[in-house]
Structures are given as structure tokens and as C-alpha cells.
Image (cartoon, rainbow, N blue to C red; front, top):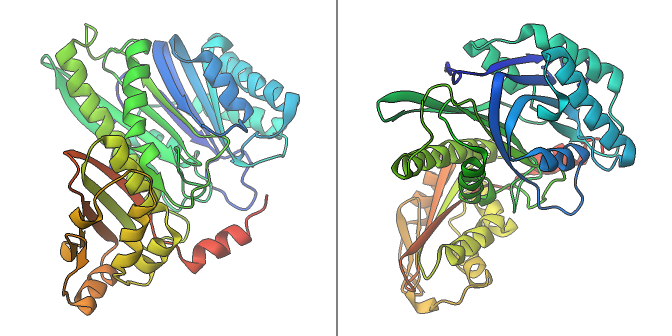
Length: 397
């Protein structure tokens, strides 16, 4: 599928040798010819990688110019040298793009505890700048440069109209393992040509991330490098967002983030199923979220789905230990649309038919309906397979 880049951005992706076992691109560059606004949300792990610390200091901003991304090395747990290297990456990026280093951000992903090979990094940055462009091929190259154990690139886009002016959103992400409960081992860059100031962008991105990247689970291991940035060139609209425009834009931003988040989970290491969990009838969204998180994070639920086992007991009991109080006699459960449990009691159903529906489809839906209120939340997870163990047992630390 071809994706069209929002106006005001140029992208590139190159291979500089950071991925020794692969010839996939490992360095990506995003450049704005004119100053843009930028906002970011980052890992909640207390062990934080140098590039995250640097970007936290530089966002939100109205003077964003470039973002350099490397895969293959996370520059995490690398001490003072790691911070010097992260700063140096922004200096080199500013140098080759002809902009101030203060307007540059950096993202890194890969193995932790190993200093960046700066000779390769410098070569990648210098080679990326002449390759900048705005075609679908440039988008694909930049999206590939972010990947680590991912099997596919993750790109999503939306077109929208703001007061008769056409603008767009395009997001790129990486992530496959070390996912959840707060964001993931993931990087994401979302670009728009709608005019949004950095304060508004920060508020909208934080909310969108809460309902998307914070609602996914592969293995429950929060990373040191999680970063999501929203970049606005502002060249497609001549006025800032009105209150009505903001609501409209926020819906599209959330949908792009959810699309990327689902792609991350669907590409979970060793995964054979994407699980969408809808929890309704709660007093608050937070209650519904916690129940969805407990179900999606349960190894027993995950392995049941991997084995195509419609084990309602694992799902219901996970909801019960999630934390929020609810009436157990007011719970209904549907799996792939089939009612398994109603008013706190199992009902007759055809186990083989439900098992077949799991086995024959990539996506499995779990619907839990409580009787406490009107709030609903969605959560996404993947199943847990032997392949996940193999991938992570063999991964070099």
C-alpha cells in the first residue's frame, strides 16, 4: 500500500552496518525544511535511555527541525558516554541538514548496555541526508530503518478536512516484543501538516497514547526507550485548530495511534493471534482499562488462545483479580461473538465451534460486559507461543 507523506516533511532510510546480520535499513532521518512543532510521550520505566532523556528536555517545542533514528543499538544503560553520544547524534544531524542541533531529536532501539558504534552512526547520518525525499518509497525506507525483531513495517495514515483545507496524518512505528503495560519497546513518529501548536499537540498526543499505545500487551515488559512524537509542519492549514477542529483532529490522531498499536501487537514475537478485548459496563474508563489489561496480560488467557481453547474460566478469573470492584453475578462473556457466560454463570455452547473460530482466524475478540455503569475500554494483546520463548532465549543482550 502506498502512503503519502504530509506536506512539509522529508524522509530517508539507509543501511550503515548497525544490523550486522541483516541488510535492512538501520538509520532513518526525518527533516522539516521549516520549523515545526513537536510533542512527545515517553517510557515510564525508571531506567531510561539517553535518547529519551534528551528528547524529554527538548519537547514540546515550536522549533523542531529533524529527527534521527537508529535501530540495532538502544544506547540504554550506557552512562555519561551514552548521553554524549545522543547529543553528538543531534549535532551531526543538525550539521548535515544545516539546522541548529537544539532543534533535533534522536531515537534509538536495539540491544542495551552497549555503547553506540559512533563511526557507523556518523556514516549513517551523512548518508541519510542526500537520500531525503517525500515519495512512498522514502516513507517505506524510513519505516524500515526503525525495525528490530519486527517482521513487517508499521505505517498508518488518515486524510481529513479542516475548514475546507485538506490535511493528513501519517504514522510509523516499530515494536514486536517487550510490549506493555505502559507503551512498549516501541518507537513511533506521527506527522501532520495541520497547524497545531506544541502545547495542544502535547495534550492530544498524551490522550491518544493512553487509549492506544498504553492499551497493548505482548509480554508485560516496559522498555527503557519507548518514545512517541507528534510532529506538525502546519503547512496545509492557515489557522490553528479551533475547538471544533481539535475534536475532529483528536479522533483521527487516536485512530492512527490505535492502528499502529494493533499492528505492533499483531506482529508480537511468535504471535499467531491478535486479541481484541472490549470491557463494558464499568463505572469508569480506568476500571474497564484495568480489567482489559489483566485479561490481556494473563499468560493463561494468552496460551488458551494460542491453543484455540475457549477457556472462559481464565478470562473471568483474570477480570476478578484486576482490582476494580464489580458484581460477579452481573458479568457476561462472549468469545468471537459466542456467549459463554451470562449473569455470573456458564451457559451451554459448542466448544468445538468456538475453538474452530479461534483456530481459523488471526483475530480473536473477547467481550466482557459488566453491570456497574456505562464506561467502556478496549485493549489489545497477542497470544503466547513457543516461538516467543525461542526468539527471546536466542536474543543477544
